[in-house]
Image (cartoon, rainbow, N blue to C red; front, top):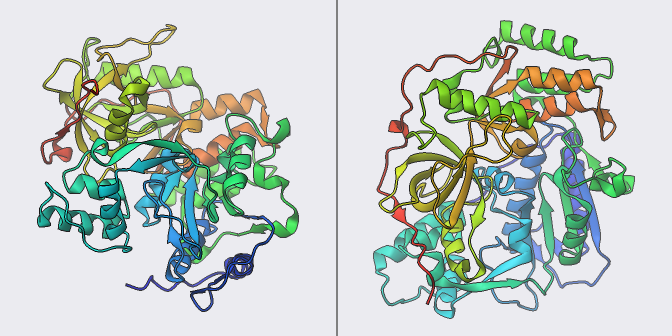
Length: 512
């Protein structure tokens, strides 16, 4: 099926033409959708920068569709075909799992930088399976897999473009088809990097080693990388590029349909805008559009599915404990329906295959998870992984709940090893970067504290950068919370909205 037609703004069209020229120099003709003989040339780097609503993601998706139509192979990080002389590849990357998942939900097969640096090694039998799914081989015959299982895998891949996900749909585990990991030694061709504002210098250098042609898409108004900016200057990596290599997009009004949330985000660019001025603007927006709420308290019901966004870690911990207290959660156990955030996989090297099982089902660092109840074995939990194709799993869990004024977190229960979780009723704005939720609550007293401190970050007041990132996480409705208050819940925590099939157990036995 042909991709939908795209109508560009003037600056989007200019950026498309400039990138097309760059790709033409390496033998990719987007105008005629063909590949021409590869020409050796110099490395090329470009950046497409623009604030929220400027159409960066639309341009990225359109370029991806055009490259795929021209015959460029998409490398997902899950699997790639054998190297061929005339093959050209495109990889779409994001710095975090959360940012990559936002793109995947929009039909763009993104992966993380880490998954490109370290690639899986497939068992030869299942490599034929992967080649068939990718349209590069004949339908395989695999012992133990029925024709129906192959059909399920094929149907899944058509919709999601995920090889491990398709294998899981066929009833396979990661350890069935992946024999190990290897550090990438061969370069690829084209890299598109979303959320490039989050890149640090080391990641930028690694990407330039892998991709002779690199295009970054970033928002200059977001927070700079946590690990530090370019040589401590406060600049983001795309700020170091010469002007001809920086393509700036401006707001596209017909795409955001006069979105009041984006109006607020763009108003922060006014250098004379103070915090009090901004709050009055939020209040005015709320009086005329229900997509903005000037809230007197945190709505506890919303916290169960989308976290409150805060600046300070101490605020995050207090809100989490208030959330648990209002629901009457005991210290020694979790309630069904409590939100968690995956904090990584705590497994020794010999259990690398088990890590693959967890990651293949979406239990990756930063994943949002809902607790469904205890598993059948001590230390195991039944979990709903938000946004995963097959969300319900059972896994060995280590749950950590931080307490106010205490250095060590409280651990209600834990397996000896497995997936580690923090509570997810509130998260810092830095951690939320790259994520989106339908409704977002921003804790304004924290933003006010940042404004009073007068701190600057990357040449802008910190409170403005925090506010910009926080409010643009909202897809449909922004709740600007102005009081340090918490509502009463409308009822007990529930998982009725998450009912589905029984979870697939993820066994953690030692490999033999």
